[in-house]
Image (cartoon, one colour):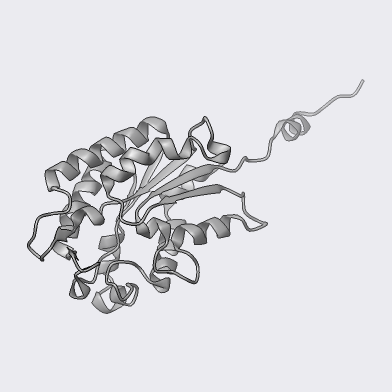
Length: 231
């Protein structure tokens, strides 16, 4: 009679870790605009996770240029429900990154907000609650803009003061819900003006190639992400 030791039994029962399926959804920084070399931090991470020695986690990039929190909320679930491996199921993790477009002012530096601040708070709360009902959620914050390059698209004015207000509202909403928030704005500004400006494109709004490399480094070394995708 063949006997199997406890150690042999545990090895036989062990199964290889399955790749996680992630939806990363947001605006043009998720899309990767401004990085002709690598396609943005999400695309760079996707390629990194496709390496032979990687677990092969699957990333769905759902970044759309110009989106604000309301647009992301409207398309959150309906988009991934019809995409390949995610059809008729929820992802293992949703990473959100949106809000900078909402912080813009229209027409002039002191013009009306693109998204009214109180309305933004309500919409962000709805988005976070909607995402959290589906699966675990992480939030990657906005990068700082170069205000001297405004207006963007000849009509939108972005500033650090407005970014800070909308960023803090988002961070606090995440904190209230136990959603990890990666404060990119704060970390970049603390490095000094020369440092972060070297990572912003000429349009003043989007990261450049160096900026996206920096974002990749920050996101891929984030403890919250590592914990979320661990086997």
